[in-house]
Length: 266
Image (cartoon, rainbow, N blue to C red; front, top):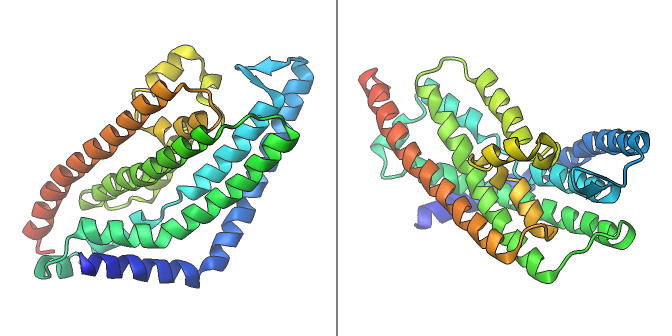
């Protein structure tokens, strides 16, 4: 356990060393937020509607701002390091050392990204203050507490999704296109661009059967009080289910991939 805590600490030090990168990332997130703002302002002005997809203009604006920040909080990047480890023989040291590769990756991910995650949540708190003060968004303390719980679940669910995805490097020579395609698809299906209600009730239902909505859409619905306490608790159970299911699937894929890796001589 101590070695994984050390790795977590090293990841945190690395994150602090490159904290300027985080500031640049947050500033970069402002650009799509401004575009979304202009887009929805035009749509609501053109339609003259008080509500679209069950959301007022300010509700929609609050959502797209919070969703963009939530997407930044769930940033990854370790998948390219994993692919390089698999292709360059970097896994060899984990074969001869009593160190779990999964434990190593999880520790480094938490250490590297937890600071970013918390800092982004602070930025979200500022955005939330603006939304409640000037846009009449109503937030309850209980919903904030449940949101933080669901956000932590989303943090680990995001890790599991991209950890599993990274294991495809055992069989695929080029993974860049796959990684970026899944990243974009995940962003859309998680509600990171627009609320899933925009896609209609039928499609929203089918999307609820996938893990993606538990990354952004579900936490934000929890935060804004759209869901009842019972629905939130059910969602948290499903979020945990997906984390566990992806973990078990990752173990199976890892075993098969590592066997082929060893068969080829690393």
